[in-house]
Image (cartoon, rainbow, N blue to C red):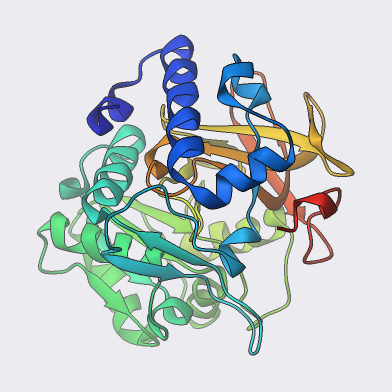
Length: 324
């Protein structure tokens, strides 16, 4: 299957065909996923719809090497975790494919990254190695080709001055930050930004009390003086991102799809109600494109979705038989 063809998907039928091809490829080339499918007695010859494809519990990335390629990994992305907790590892055998995915994805929703000055406020990610988010934002900063673009760790005064000067100059800005750091910034600075996209990547990372999305966005809208707060939905185990332009309603790029499953029965899909999030990410061809996450959410008729929360416990309920 041509990897480039993933980014030219233009219809539901095209997506479904490529998803079935990807399932067959990963069944044949990913030993962890193959063993999982064998446990469920699921074989490509018996599957004709994407709803029938098994979704690998995301927990497997903590204990197994989930790869569908014989190539040596070019890097290993790792998840952030609390002290002593086991982190996920994503063995990436083709960084160019990751770059194609996140650049095409951003361009799909916001236009060329070259149009923006990119400011990254991601202290918890910058302070560790192996963050796929840092890799993406660093590439955005480089490709933006603006000398003003860059990362900020805890330099809130400098960042505030930069945001205000760029705003005065009328330049388009992408400020992408982790939630707690964005809140830290507006505690001592008030803005009235006209040409800035403020994008939160979620997570208080133990630095602040968790807020529901509406509370967080209300504080950020007031502090930055903007009418909408954008959001990014991605994770270590994926190669693609979904984006929200406001109100926490996310859209996926054409090569990504969200499906919900019954939180109490991992093998049963649900529609038009809150469920656990399954992700199809066709850019994840060299790993696993069909992942059962620990997020809870709702998918709407047009394919958009919102994230409502996470499972209370670390194990995905209903997946006991899946512990290889």
